[in-house]
Image 1 (cartoon, rainbow, N blue to C red):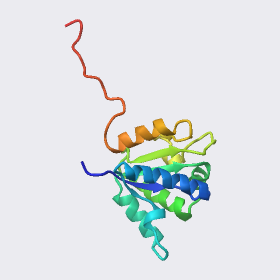
Image 2: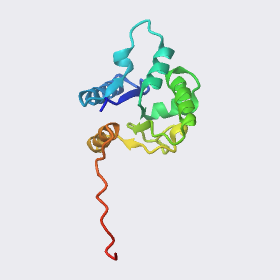
Image 3: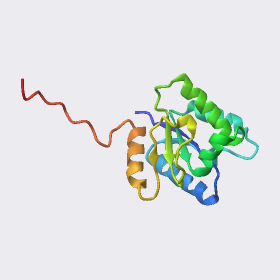
Image 4: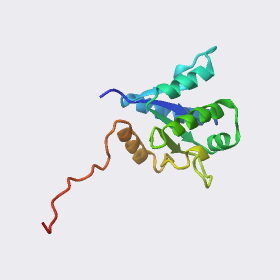
Length: 160
């Protein structure tokens, strides 16, 4: 099986948050996932819109790190990196409404609405500290097309 390719969309809330994102991306890479991350894949002078467009287009899945600032920027702002990525992701979602391509991950978020409006219909995972390991297990399994809880084999009717 070919390595799943993911693109990270997140806001640069703080150096601590950027380190958290880097640690998650590193762990995914160590588990065979091809991650596109600005901290690795952008250099001084690179074209930021091109990076976002190609990263979002080339990825099999897009991971949205839904912190409070990310959600607010996505819901309120029309410019900047989060706003630009929102525009591209929204167009991709509209082109394939049944897709599970976008994976919202919630962390450092006490808002009543945990994800931006444009992905509010998508099932999200909590990556808060108490949920992290279980959520990571589900995420890596999902990215590799495996199930954490496989469906049991269906038996025969006891009434047959």
